[in-house]
Image (cartoon, rainbow, N blue to C red; front, top):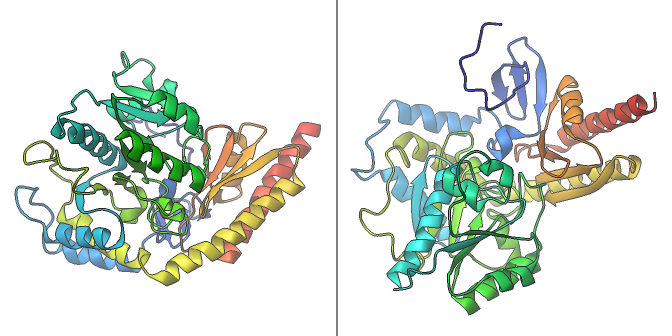
Length: 395
């Protein structure tokens, strides 16, 4: 293997994947794997979805890039669809989830400046949260290790205990700009916050005058069985950041807001060169059209029930290893009593790809199109991996 010149901030396994179709992916040796992580909740419609291929190739033959110096028709079309189906009234397209988070944080602070309350700068996040790798995002995230070695913490970022509404009440005050929360934490252990808690945050924000930001980068785009996870709680945010699944594999994201929350985001205060480019918008429109079909969400909820039953059966069969089933919809975790990375490796050897998350969690975020037989295949593989772990430990 020749020397790699890639910055060594990841430690990938030896497999090199070269082709994908639906929920399956092949390496350069011709071996076939069931993909139950989908690029970390990105490939919502599976690999090489024909509808996305068509949209991308047709657009590639027309126009790739103009920058936001000019209007991009695909942006207007996709923004209108988002606004039609959710709380938002304005949308800004980005290249990634981190950029969407940055825009959401800036929008929240700018709102208070526009209201002549520039002292409102504090952003309250939650322990275990993950909002991206940029400097503001790692300060908003609830993992101190992401800040190690990158200089002092940015002022104005506070973490509350996860799921503790009273703690938020005590932390919030006249300098609070916003609370930011993932309805389902990804990196923090695939933990779903309760609908009651989401409603409590909304009430508190209204009472105290701060904004509510939902980070739906991982939990959105139909992953929990509704287009956006917060819709299960029947409340709306002021600002929302999205990415991952909304592009179906093509890099794109967005932050969206009510007109009131975005009142400070006027000409010249924010921008992007590549965000919302014609290629991304062609794929984003095609992907959203598929995600918005009721039949797909019905499928997600049906398959999610099957997956949940399978994971619960693993907890019943392996009580010495499995603590709990976490998450929601097709963003699920299996909390273990041991480090999940060896189990992840065994599963990869068994040709099933999964992820890991904090708090000893094995993470599953398969394509939304996964079927019952494929779920059963994954559950059987996890069962075998856990059984092998028990045998090895007792040897």
